[in-house]
Image (cartoon, rainbow, N blue to C red; front, side, top):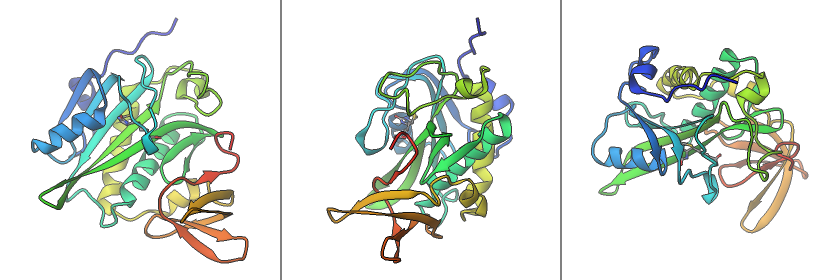
Length: 263
Ligand code: BTN
């Protein structure tokens, strides 16, 4: 039997934290609907840049495109970071790409896993997803105030619901050993802080991006397109070479990459 990891606490997380801002205020909850909703409430009542909320489980974990994020206790790491100026890069869209890079690098450095980024910010091992992110923005009186980055990492999950089992993996399943959620969180925050400070997308993003060179499909103005992903623009868009040789930049929405998650 594995030793069950103790619940995250602010003392535990902060005791090994090397950051100046991210996680300097941290609230660790046993359960919540969604850590993104908790951060929204805190942001609206003036919580500082870098505030983090974690939860042992979420009853209403949310994913991108209105999907549900499976958030059972024992195994998953669920947290959201609040970012305000000056911790926001000029290109807001780069926040999530930088967060994807921070998670990917943290996992690669701490564990023997070949983690890669599926543009824009899913982290995958092989063809399965190990981490997803949901970024949200807050406005007040018509002006932009904050960004929240909600991150879900499958750390010690042993099983997934049937509909996810071919698309999801965890660090435990990949390494064969239980991993410390606290260490994963500390390492992600430590990698993210300098990346946000620089603001630009480093070359390592492209090197770790598994989408490049693959066939991708996307839709624009109700028309479907396919082509080969050939680069990332300075604005964090996916550059796709279409079959007629033209290159186009895909900014948002759903892009399916052949060979990943059983597409
Ligand atoms: C996705 O891949 O669709 C995004 C998943 C984001 C999940 C995280 S878990 C912590 C935070 N709270 C949420 O409700 N969602 C994000």
